[in-house]
Length: 97
Image (cartoon, rainbow, N blue to C red; front, side, top):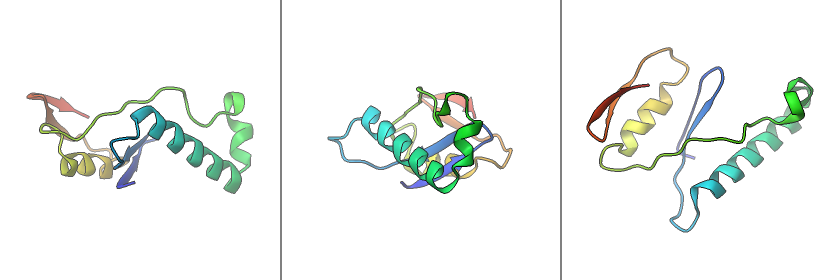
């Protein structure tokens, strides 16, 4: 884990991994470990969740590349929860987050 950012209804993780580990496996492991730790430290959470699951089944992943370098993504993740719009260019198109 390089950086973690959060909003009211979602979390952003900036993760560095080895090329032999695929994104779906990284996501599965992250969700499993974080849910287990949260339920262990705060068992009351599970009773408030519909179906008892902490995470939804979906996720979004992107890789660091020419148009989304590590420093830009790290700044975006750091800015989560600050109610700021962060502009960045991906594939030459301006995007507001």
